[in-house]
Every structure is written in structure tokens, then in C-alpha cells.
Length: 325
Image (cartoon, rainbow, N blue to C red; front, side, top):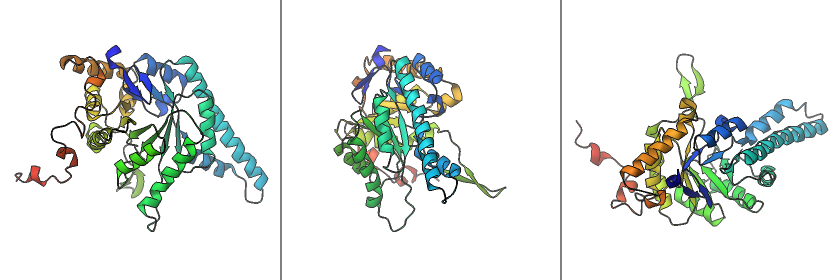
């Protein structure tokens, strides 16, 4: 495992493979199992602003009793946050690998104060899973982006631990957003967030959820931006997410320039012990190619280092299919 060490957010990880935020990281037993099976770090299951807010609305009595509603709101928030804080503390006592809590939010209100409590509980870093759904056709892209930047500015002013933003890919200029986050003190980005997507059941004529698990094909949506972001030279930590089925997928992301790779879907399907297989596959690949350290090849095929950077820039594919009948 020594040769699998990597640096992320100023921390040394024994492996570049991180278990991402999910039910798999929601209890201490699984967190311990993740470390035992070779995880380099764990991102705790997100504390959801939307879910807690919805719960508050469900429990609120009526507009005629504002004092009661204020009490309910305070109780639900406090109970949810306190339970989460206890998980952070317990994880820090039992684990030697970094523990990274996650907040899933869409406003910059009281959640900023929750982050302070999370830091005080001993968290090594904080991952912010934020997404603002632009539903107003008169709201410009730049105004939508301000929501993220204002949230980050308020958060950075409150905490001292590294802050990571888990981004969606639906920005008009991903590299611009990353640069703006860097200038505001964000230490890392996760590319990319995986959102709930709707589908339609044509037999029942109902809106249903699209498949939840990612698959290796989806790496093609991520590799380009990992390669381009890592070539910017800012020193920001970059964690890849989506489409990891094994060690080869991790290697691809590392070659593109990722510092770490977050894994989730394949662990649901094959269990936490599969972390050991992923690490072994990375190690075997390194041995076959005579690499003794991840830094010897990380980013070797990013936008700056490849002999053909135009491959990452190309968006039209007619050249490749013009000969197909």
C-alpha cells in the first residue's frame, strides 16, 4: 500500500480511493469496514438541508402557532445536526484515515453555522454538495453562479478546515467556476456530482426515478474536465467521481490528473471488500508499467502534458464517423 499514497487537500492518504457520500458511510460499522478494506478516506453521508426542511414543514402545525413551529424547526434541526456530529466524533475516534463530512445544501443560511460545529467535532475537511436548480428563465447564468460563490464566501469566513465543493457539470464554463472557487479559498473540487434524474414509465404514464447507479460509460463526461482542470496549475485538490467499476477506471482518472477517486455504485453492488481488489488492480498496473509512486504518473495525460491536447478540446465527432456507412 505504500506506493499508493497520494496527497489530497494537504493530507496524505494511503490510497487514492475514497468511499463517497452514501448510505455506505452513514454508520460507524461501515466506516470501520471501509478503512479495513483499504479506503484512503471516507466522505460521510450528507446532512441534507432539503430533507430536514421538508421534515420541518411536515411537522409544523399551522400558521396560527408560530411559536410552536419555531420550536419544531429548532428541535428537528438540532436533533439532526447533533446526531451527525456524534457520527463525526465517533469516526474520528475509531479511524486513522481522514473523515470528511458532507453538507447537501441549497442556501447559505444556518447551514454555515452547522459547518462550524462539524469542524469542532474534529472533521479533517468539509465537502459541500450544492446544487441550485435554475428554474427562472429570466435569471442569467452569471446570477445562478453567484449563489455558489456567495455560499462559499460565507463558509470560508467561518471554518479553517479545507473546503471542497462537489460540482455538477451543468455550468456554462466549468473551468471559470473552478477558478472562481480557488480565488475564494476553496481547496478542492469533486468532478462531478450525480443528481437525481427523472424518467417516464410509458405503461403507467408516470414520472419515475432514472437508474441510480453509475456505469463506466459515464467516465467520458468526467475525464475531459479532470484533464483540463488539473492542467490549470492552481494546486487545487481534484477528486474524480462517477463511472468507477474497478482499478483501471481509477488509473484513467489519475492519468488525467485527479488526486483521488471517489467510489460508490460498485461498492453497493460488490460490497466494501471490493476496495481491496481496486487497490490491487492499481498496484498491479503500476508494477507492469514500472511506477513506484502515484506522483510518477498522475496527470501524465492531462490537457497540458499530452502530445495531442486537441483531443480534449474536440467536441464534434463527424471526422471519426464520416467513413461509417
